[in-house]
Length: 447
Image (cartoon, rainbow, N blue to C red; front, side, top):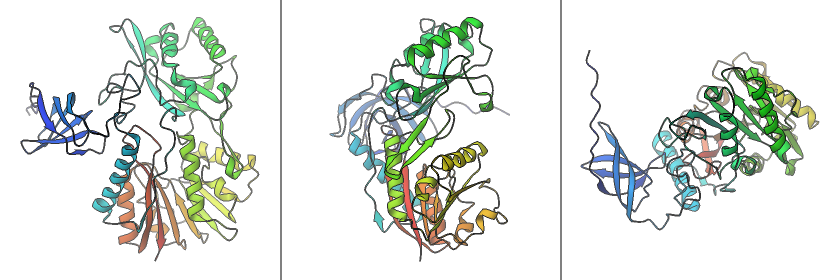
């Protein structure tokens, strides 16, 4: 069987008129009736670009020169933009970024779900910089780059680690630590065997921030001393991960991490561990929870079901105003954290269950109560499997938090077109500024 030939990439530079923005933030042009997705280009621009990939139905390229700039083009703040893959839209005015995301959501609802919201909510927005309190960064020893260790996000549409010295979207406690981490890891005996670091920050100062270092080989005694000195110099909690997530532990001789975030409007304090899933944007998370409470209007008469509840991010705030909240999550550790957070906040009306929401819950005890309202915050794959069970329940209101507009649109179509719900309202939340990531929220009511 012969191998498929790789298509030859045109070598000559090409001029193009950009007509649209793709779902991942690249400018869209059409040359000889073929779509070309061009990194660094914006709608309304005339650019000179270089081809980078050629496929049967589309090509890809990168801008070499902007001949006629869009009025929405701005100067990227980060010197690494265009190489680093952590951001895709720093060259687009933030107001237009969120408009693009709102447009993406509405197009997905119409095209995939065949639905239209009765109301389009104003987008929820927050800080454009230093918003990212949690991130997984790649690490790579590269002898050809001055014998350096690179620490950062991967390159734009590439498999290599971007050569970054700072990162203005990271929490300020990490923004200028990339170079220090690079030098630290390079000084270790196993510098070629450290594939990633994971950063996490809560409220408070350095004691509320941590770094997990993944190590494929054991550290030497000298290595451990260097790591302890780094923790002492920075005030950051330092953890090591020799194998899977269950092996994460605090570096001996250094302080335990003190990670938490607060929801002051609702008198809630949420404790979490460095590897736990949390919403990366603290201000947007608070605004998102406030919108959920505003929309659901919980009262003492409500029994609310929170699916994919994590460590209780929505559950506990809702429990402040509801008769009872039941949270369901597939991750045992997160459920344990949710229960601990309920106890910490003295909320006896919040209960949590462990369940795989991609398996049939028909006999599950948590599905039997007569719920009045449901909130769900599923992963990118959406909540398709659980929707028939929600439709068969007594709940008259469903609030859907989504991190992927296509799966939300599919599920919206199922709720509306198959189960008789009405899409009352929908809108986006700028959880990840300068990226093409679309976080959204939608309200469904039973007709």
